[in-house]
Amino acid sequence: MLDMILEDFMKKAHSFSDYYNLNNFCNEAELWYILWRDKNIKKEELKELELIEVLKEAKTFFPATMHALLISLALPCTTSTIERSFSTL
Image 1 (cartoon, rainbow, N blue to C red):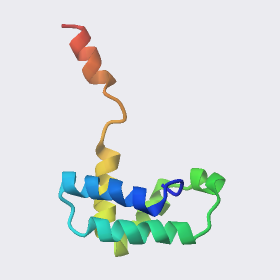
Image 2: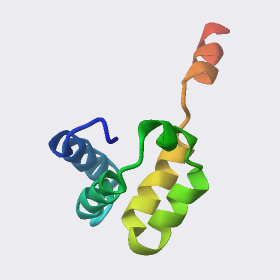
Image 3: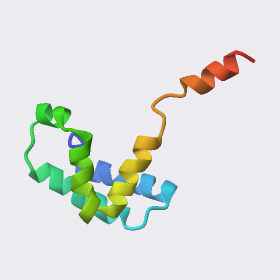
Image 4: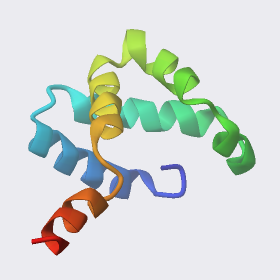
């Protein structure tokens, strides 16, 4: 996320918000980006960041962002199960 410039991040946020119909997500996404950018955390430290810490940050002040994170967690990372099903037909 922090490798992107804010404008590119916001384009992706708008697309995500439109697809999942998340109210106020774009406004929160911009604040979320700025929050993490201003923390001045090194990339190595970000890689070590626990998911629970990120969710705690979002829970109280970023409800739409929390919803978006939960949606992202629920999405499968691959379609290999579906592909295997079709290959057996």
